[in-house]
Image 1 (cartoon, rainbow, N blue to C red):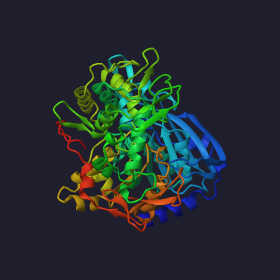
Image 2 (image 1 turned 120 degrees about the vertical axis):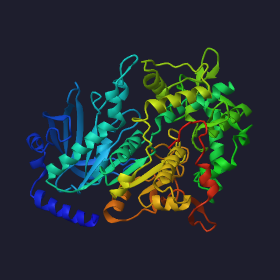
Image 3 (image 1 turned 180 degrees about the vertical axis):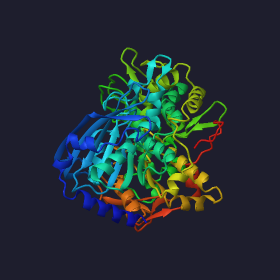
Image 4 (image 1 turned 90 degrees about the horizontal axis):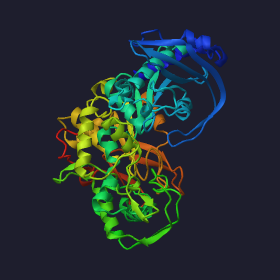
Length: 579
């Protein structure tokens, strides 16, 4: 049925736009003439006077971790705005529409990152590579350079719930509905495929659409989603709280030595030594940071604290030489174990053992000559702005315990269940509409724990196939929703500590092939983008299967129950199911 639909849509496209050039369709007047009608989305009024349109030719989309790049692209760069009835607001939309000759009968919504709802030009360009109209939104936050934090508080103690719901799911949905209608009228095409692509916050945004609007997209490429935000954002304080609990504040290079040792020790657990930990599950089961005690480390003086490429911990720090202490190993082991409350019950999972200890970055006090932990980054923003509803750039860690983190997590679960959690596991509408999703996550991600994705994938299995055993349930789920863990990869990109790890740069292409041509990706294509290895093009195993290399160098995707179980903890400290 999908092949027939594609043929019919292509025929309609050829008959309607083949005689038109980019110059014909890329004018303000033409775009105004094909805008969706007022109240096409109930309660929304478009502003024709806000339309801008300019033609861009011979454009090059740079290669990135999420797109292979392409040159020679021609498109119409369009922006316009709309308002909501009864609200004094303006939301800006931004679309790149391929020239009629390069339009491949596709529409793509893209997601943002951090607390921004838009990725800007790079994300829009990713659509052009695949001949798709690509759309993004500013969420009504005041412009494409503004994020949620700029509008979240109306005043101390007063949360802007309109902005919160826009960020949570509404703005992406409105942009998608309007973008698809603009595509239909712009090309006079009655039918086309619609897709979503996003990673990190963009991954959460993708799931917000799949979970709520099951018929909106034919396929989605979703990476390292930052969903379950009540856990995810508070958890960014966990590593610092481990340090305060132990009253030990290691320099970045001491923990970095432990991380380097972990990678070396666990490299061969997958059957081959290549500088990549492909089996972080086995690493977690078999490796202990105490093996690093006594190993030497040294760091050059730094102008800023923190790990290279990490969030940064503070001011300048001196050159340092030493050996890994028992205290540092104990800190590392407790971080890897995850968050437990004072009663010994598990609250949340941690990053996999090969991930850098980025959240544990400490600052150096030049007066005392000591390192110390400091709340910073998105955890600071989340606790102050979202939970406490105050505009403050500081948060004391004095008296903050594991139980405190649990309390904050439970508060966020209640407060943002319908906006930021984004963990609804019943995907019946998406499945029944024939939707396909490829969900990927770097195993060495140091921003969003890889197990976070495994837990959600398993939750969907349990809800969608309650009468099947685990193995059969995964087989059924993988017919339309596949999860791929990426060996050695960091957050939405290859890892600098494991450069020989492959990365699935063209996930969207795999989704398109699956949706439009029925080519099911039983294994996912991945490319070594930064490393030095002979097998640049590799394949990834779909969860729950895990990679293992035989003595002859052949990789198998194996099913091992102990490995699967290591990804799926019991959150006995949380009074409700954690999806």
